[in-house]
Amino acid sequence: MGLICIMAAPLSLVIPPWRRDRKRIALKRISGLWSKRKETALRIEEIARLWRADMQTVEKEIERSHFENMEVKRFCETHIDGRTYFNGAAGEVARKLLRLLDKEGDCPSVVGTEGDPEASLEKTTFGVLAKVPLYEHTIHVAEEMIKENATGPSVAKSTIAALAHDIGKLPRYRKSGYSLGDHPLFSVTALETIPQFKKLSYAKEILQAVRDHHGRPRDSFSQALREADQRARRRELAEHAKAYKEENGVAATASSVSALEKTYSTPAQADKPVKDEPKKPGEVELPWFSPERFLEKLKPRVNRMEGGRWVAFSMSDGYVYIQAKTMWEAVKALGKEINDGLIAMAAADENLRRDILLTIVQRLRGYGAIADDLIKEGYFGGEFVVRMRDGKVLKGFYTPFRAEAFTETVSELESIKEGRIRDIVDVSPKYE
Image (cartoon, rainbow, N blue to C red):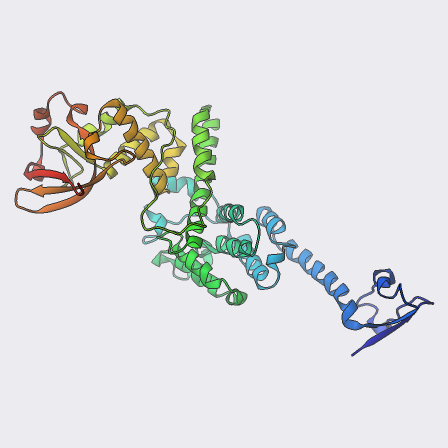
């Protein structure tokens, strides 16, 4: 074991000439080790940590200089550099993901490849999100995850999962077979190619969350990532809507801004067990909604066949049944007319769509248009059993209306029935 013998006087640390260009350490930095004794022997390992710490600092400074994208660099300096839980493998994995985003992350943050979860986004919404670069969306998701896991070991796990969740959208992965779609699977593959990733004790949890962030989460961590992704998207759509209104001289109402902020700032319930059933809808603010205009959008589709199917039909007992999808199409039509950002956000968020539909049904209840006796309070529709003349039984989710919301007489609606709609003989709630 190497020893350095230091006398009280003269105070000097002899370094051979051929080693002097490697590292110099001021004696005052180690004087505390012998200040209480006239003479002492210092083990090399006792002072080695001093130059190791200096070298680590230099390496971190070099690491920072590698980032050309200022947003990526800012994120790394704010959330990664110098953080306890990013020492070792976690830091290497996080920086590797950031380097990938720094180099190729200026690509669109959504992809429309057939088979991909985002391919079904409404055209306008897809166009807006396509203008958000991947590196920016990824940082938004990471920031949302960090908000929920601000302290403790889970910070590293949450951050890495967020940085990796859409990494499969990078051009390098799309060129190597992305035509098959399903970017979460490419993100998982990309993660597994990072050597240090497998050393993480929580690697499997991250892979599961990344794989499920567009599907049905199987655990609370996967659910947290999914909700962080959705909040980030709502944030991006809200910023676009606000910018649009400012550019076109249209001021956003206080209630609309409040609704948008409330929508994307709700904390994820990552500490609660994930349930198979979606959360119960809640009401949002829709200051522009008009029951009369909404019913006008629905009326032309009642008792009409569309592509061999019906989307809304009446019965002689005075009820009209309208599919939830048809309800939403009417909402989108109205939202497009007044360019409401909340409606655009809902295209990428099933829970928000449910909230909006519930709000509208509640407004229609007050207007007297809803058949209150057929659906429970707090719901925008229910499952119904439709029996045909030939004995066939069909099941569907409908919102029940009162016929007088569309016409003065029930017979007027009955007279315009088309095709198989005439063969419907009975409709009843699926559950009593």
